[in-house]
Length: 112
Length: 142
Image 1 (tube, rainbow over the protein chains, first blue to last red):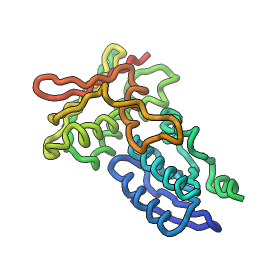
Image 2: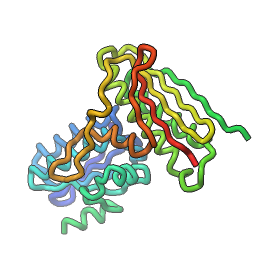
Image 3: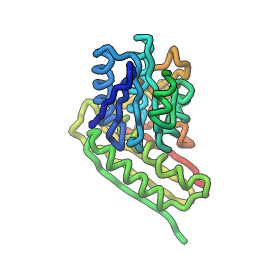
Image 4: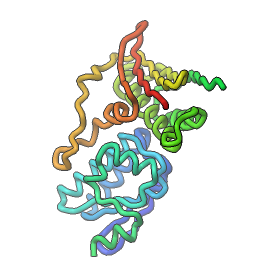
């Protein structure tokens, strides 16, 4: 799985550069999030602009990251949810749990 | 015009084939004559249903014999969409799968697959038939 990481102050943005986040590759996102949190980052924005499809495994990995961020008294926020991804968040009611933003800039703005 | 569809797929028991089965689901759904309000959503729904069903067969049902293939059948006839996923594993009790917690303080990483299937389809059954297990999911279209 390809990622791109950018730092904006204390916040790290992780861009997922894949069109699918499913049972075949979601574990790689879990490892990458763990690596970021282990490096001392507490606030993470995950940008899903390129992700066109997500399944329950992908959702589960994001829930895992959310819980890890909470343990660190930090946050995990999401940006750029495409239509199928958005509908899966709504179906599983996870849109009530996550802070979801239209753009990365909107997500970063929420920290100021 | 007759619009019946019957697609039969045999696929290796590995998650790297999820992309293929998802794409097949999208293409099949695009050929189904369905109400306008469902037309845009059905390809994504069928892709998710096939993905979740296949993952279930790979990880839970077929895990003891990963070299065995998984058989998938998609049928659309008389407004009924039926997806059947066959496996040769030890199976599991569908009724014992709990609904996931929606409370942010209690939510688990796992356990949303069956909930998603039940939400998107009208009926979801997992039965033993002719020496193999069948995850059978039905939805009335229109």
